[in-house]
Image (tube, rainbow, N blue to C red; front, top):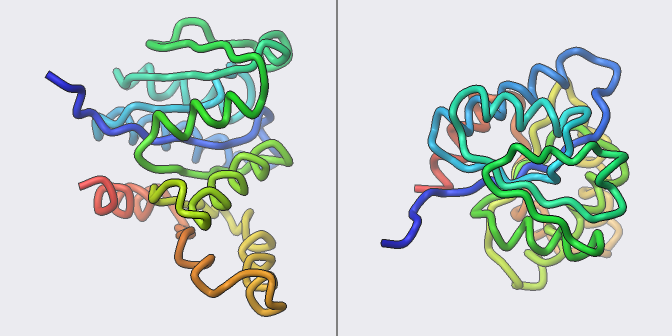
Amino acid sequence: MANLQKSVCVYCGSRDGVRPAYAWAAADTGEMLARRGWRLVYGAGDVGLMGRVASAAQKAGGKTFGVIPVHLLEMEVGKRDLDTFIITETMHERKKVMIMNADAVVMLPGGAGSLDELFEALTWRQLGLHEKPIFILNTEGFWDPLLALIEHFIKEGFASSSLRDFVQAVPDITTLEEALAAALS
């Protein structure tokens, strides 16, 4: 029988950031995914928000699927106690394996790497390469500048208004859980 478990790809920082709310949101996300029976798909790191999401999911009994490129095994401290632990040759391969093994995407606070992952998923969605929902957990307004930038792309004619339909910003874990439940049903 085929595995019917839904999987959620989480993009987030390999650092904790300066606000405690970011770490709490990461832990709450991991716990929520496990409680709902959704498998975590993420970058397989054991540092920063990545490590917090995975550890919380594991502690709550959730399934985990991590993908890490060989050159980041040491820097991101590859978390080898995951249910599935995949080592890729390149970053591009990592991103492809992550999104292809997920039913939805969630973006937590992070830096340039997280933006790279999000924009690749968003671009692929825009090009019709997938139809997976993309959610941005906007913890304490962290992603307000990004959301404004997306509006700027549209206003200045570099994207159609449909771009805003491909990403949904949510303010908290409760709203994220409700939105994921609706999208994955």
